[in-house]
Length: 368
Image 1 (tube, helix red, strand yellow):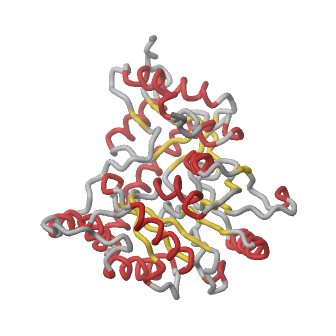
Image 2: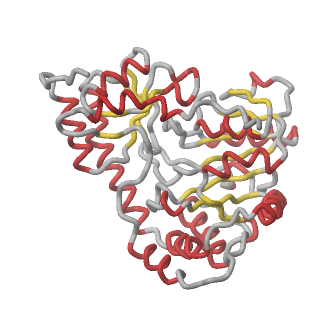
């Protein structure tokens, strides 16, 4: 039996550094992953529980209330108008969609950002599609790829693409019949600038043909454990994805659909969660700067893209010696080899512990 040719799972490579960080007398501060640590909003828990007794199969397309809530949230939160609720499709989190979308769309060639979420590359490999890393269109020449991935705010860099750039990509793609897929899982987390959806009229011109946007409730609503996401955009593309997913049984459980509906209908908990991340960013960012780091981009999103102008793995080691675990930039592409990605997803107590260790120049360093 031959399995797909996939890269090593990145976080497996952190095992030795994780062990070193865990040996710190004060325990590890794990800033290497973007997993939520804050409570699931009570209104979401209540909606999940209320739907727990439903025994029948859920619909792949999702309940109408969920799709209507997604359309309304897109308009309220991001200024995206004119989306029909049939152009919304719930997904089992966003990662499975990212991994399988090229296969589901029959893509044979992909363009991804130079620094990118590793699952974009995995998706290309699963589809046996050719892959190009590029942040610009000029480098692609006359090529007409099947699919272009955009990610703004970026994971890992926190970079936000301006409207002009997004619009140029959309126009370029439409001239070539290329599908544009925008990963917008961090769209609610703008700090120094306001991210814009690819579906916003200022980008799309009011026409979503050839465009898809991927959304997740993992960060905005602390629903990573629920596996709650959705894709929205070109109705024809969504219909095609729906038909394939019906046959494959790729269905969001009915109680999770109810929870998503409640989360999308409420903006207060989203603002509260953003404030939590913002408070952690406000103390961690200056502590890193004081410790000699430079922080690039990071104007939005859930991470700080930091460097000490040395090998990323040397920085990972330096932090691990202080009980702090970060992800090396090499996880996200070759050009990340001098940066680390530092997540804001730790409790206030753990963030404070990281700040204390970064500022304590005389702290003893554990020896493995």
